[in-house]
Length: 553
Image (tube, rainbow, N blue to C red; front, side, top):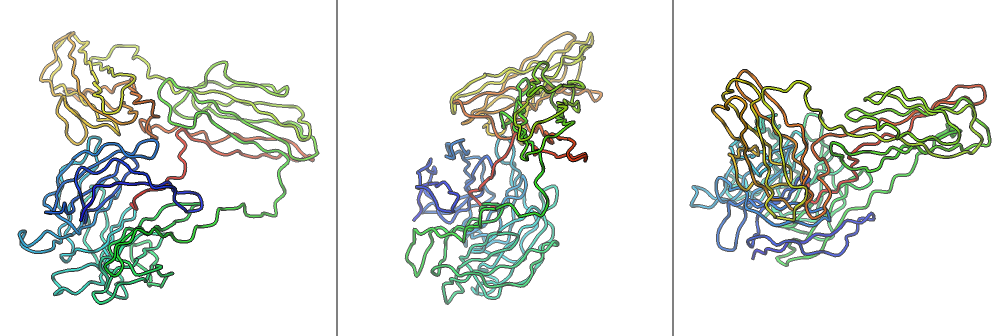
């Protein structure tokens, strides 16, 4: 029987899980469905609703606290289906095989459909290269460029389980190349699971038709997408079928979780995980510890909007009993930002030389002598500039307004104003605005693939037109991708980035996609009549921490 329950648990550093927390339930009871996730949303596709197969696709957004927002129906599959598999590669979701029932001309299908993830949801589902056979009760995983379909059940084999492994390359436009049969499983399996773990394809549990399995096997994934020989891994604590398996990153390695399932027709609520990889420790090195060290920090470490600042603090320290001479620390103004005048601070009697405020400019702090074991810090600020107003008005101009704050699911209205600054009419005008990441389109204009459009046949001389569209969101959104085009190749992009803070949540991790990278500072000094140097760490805005995906992608 299906359920609508959704729960989550935080992963601790030792691999254990915190208490399970109820999240926003599904809009319908469901089982035999599939679940995939991006960094922003989780998707539930197809399945059984206790009376019939489903073609619905629901989506919920991740909240900053790790929870889920409301579920929305965002798409419908080409036909109702269950016992299928779904994977994400890049910006595309794939649905592979599955059970469609006798009313559809057979109990299983070999069809593969894909859809591109857009700002507003999903594009229309399109067929791509079909599997070599109709398959259900199988497993599927994907790397960055290859999809694997493993084992399963097929009516083409008179009810016998499969040991086949198929692989297909993903093309740049989302279509799939030809399916190729690669190294087969040592035994037939269905109702199993597969994950990718430290560069290997793992196949876990399941049944052969005669026996439920504890066994776990793996094969290394080669550069061409083929598989090396299978090897046995540590078996499960008990034989399991119809369970879930995910792989997460911890300490630059992978950790496998096995969740619930069935054993001898008895449902389980157990959660198992593989051994926790050891926390990395510094590798001993025979080189001498440098007599001076520098570290670069930034505040904030998040995405910055136009007009916002980043403060870089450079901490320095000597760690020997010897004095240094001719010490300099050189910082740089990163790309896409400018130095804030008057923001450079000095310390310990240092002299300061600033070559400019534009990207690539250097700030140099210098000391004739640095006493042994001295320490301190210096700093400077940079600012992401606001796009300047063109010195000569363009024939077309576009501006945008939106609210600074909103509450979750409140309607947010954007207003775009386009002006013809020329003494002649401008024809074939097209206003475009991409729906921000994390927002749901409601109305206004014509939305296609996440882009809202307003075609205007003619804009009279020195006239202005205004258009609007409405979205909702459950966390802060950033809108910066909008423009206006016209005949003769005219294109003017919007200059203002509109940030709407929703219930005080931070902006999306990537903001409008701009990353400010500070490659680090360099310290140079003289010690024991030798010229020495040392580079610091690099910092970024936004700075991403370890991401533990809830769903194996």
